[in-house]
Length: 340
Image (tube, rainbow, N blue to C red; front, side, top):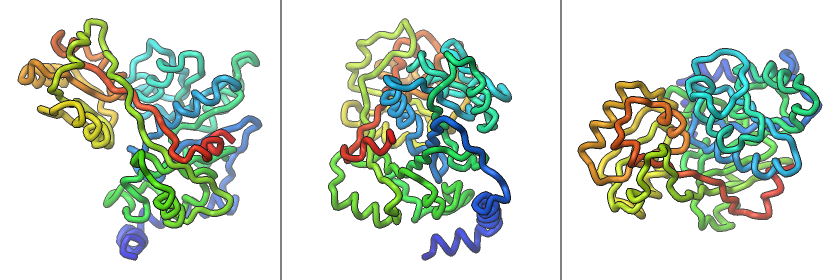
């Protein structure tokens, strides 16, 4: 297979480093630490765009009624260092946009960031008994083998299969495809809502799902637009025209959803997790003036960073909304697999 050939030979330096690292962990030359409470890792093999945040939020909703939940993230894009507890008034630059989004949506759970996952877990375990979590969700931690999770959940984008991709920098693979064998649960995300059982079976064969693994197929469901600023005018939601503002790894699913209701007049795309500057705010304001009657739509993750951007004009604030997303499980009999 050409993908295997390129990954092993043409991208040999990166392939070799990954292979040696996994070998050291697999043979216990480097130890992974286990913990006394359930640790659920939610990660992927590709770089971004698989839907980790909405799947983390799904697990939070399901676990909250019976468990004291904590989420531990790296806090990608933050300027702070080390371990930090996240609070709702924080700025994205302090803790990262995704942890902040989760904390604002679920204020009663613990959200923390630390690039050193083992240290972060130990800090959470050291909390007073009444505050200590009973389960910890590790965001984007499949490659962090210093911790041995109770459950490894790995997300695969339906539109970006790992067996037809290359290692970075040529492709989007951040890890070796055969590491999927370490997953306890494989979730194929962003599936078409009408994915039939025959297609699911072909995916099981394609991913070589073993008898010890569970496979779950999910789709994304968009909710109604939500205003970012208090001065927003909800009448813009009913405009026929829209301008799209994003800084995510893959804005295509959002775009495909919006074209069913709006004519997209223009779009402005930044790099994933882009930290918006005052200059960006002025640029967005100028860009919006060219489409004075259009709704401005962004993602929920981007909303966390745009909310603190003081250079946005009042006109933009009146028209700027985001679309929340939730996970829908297509093979309902597999729902409990995510909660084992």
